[in-house]
Length: 114
Length: 116
Image (cartoon, rainbow over all chains, first blue to last red; front, side):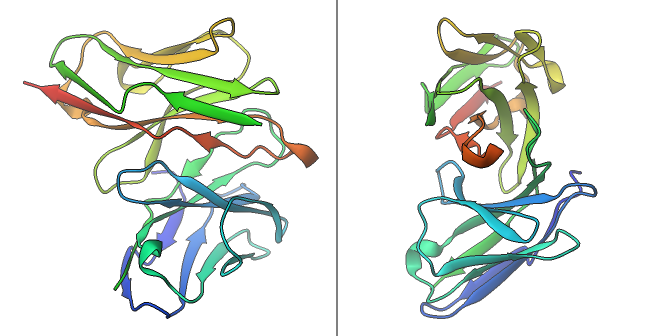
């Protein structure tokens, strides 16, 4: 148990729809990151939030957006879903600007786009 | 810039024999290095991490890894494989980027197969 919880665990959406995934970070952690893990691949960094602002972004289009709330929980929003968005979406929490900070992952949200 | 290369996409061992999963990294800064394990349909669990202290790092479930700066390697080992070790393993490098943030880079993963 890492203390990072994600919801929903599984969902199916139709191409063109929008989806919101939610994450509660581990107690005391002020940084949340989101990753996309396609089948058979390693996790790919989407973006990171610190103090409610986007703090870094990977190679993902603007239709991937996020929010971090004052309690450090977070949402990942994906608009105009495409078939290739089908993946496991992982949320991770950590302490910002701490050398060697461990990243704790949730169990993930499985998104299937049909 | 930073990157990590896991040299084997699959490693197959027999139960009770040693495990070696290889990882090489590249980083412009002093890196922190991690190994995570992912069992089927599960999230990622931290096995161990290196953060510039002892170069031989011991983790959970009998795993350990040695940081070798001269070889830019951080290989994961275990003396004796167990059936429950069968999983996907990820090597991760994290170094300070601009603004002080630490954004990790994952390897592509190594699938460990354990035969009875």
